Length: 225
Image 1 (tube, rainbow, N blue to C red):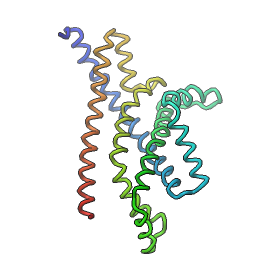
Image 2: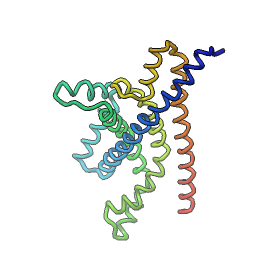
Image 3: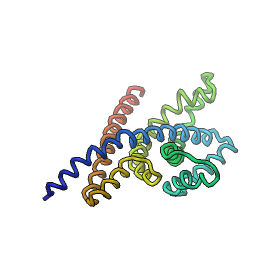
Image 4: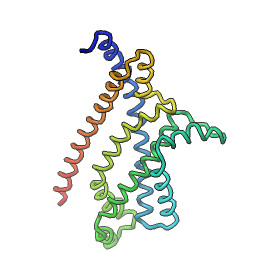
């Protein structure tokens, strides 16, 4: 049975944890993932276009970003760069690291989706007088993004949970607030379960939105066929 004291702590802490989730965790995820998608699209397109120098740069970036831990990247940017005179505030530092890290993973998803589009689609665009970029924007990219949508949605959900690592560079998001409450109340088990359930709530909402998005894309694809 939950004691009256513990129940009071959980009820009081719920809103204190949820508020930074809405004002910090969600905005951090939204901004970082938006930038990650821009990076991913650029990295995927230069590889798909086989621009040699840019492709090599993109592959190097993806290799480094995917091959090193996210936590290490956070520490390098926030704690390491000040040693060479570059100081970045916690929130922008988290945005930079999360967007670069996630951009590398999403770039591979988008690249694979682009390569899954039949080559004839690109040739069809040339046949009707479109430029390479017009063909990509109007024909290839829409088909590729429908293919990539489920995987990109999963990456977004994963990023929501990964934002808890931002507590390590003093970003006041849900996990840091929970740590502070634990230090004051000495109830780690209940409070960490509570914040886990809040993360689960956010992930569930995104999963539902993903399901709705996939259904709409399937309907659109069937109508187009």
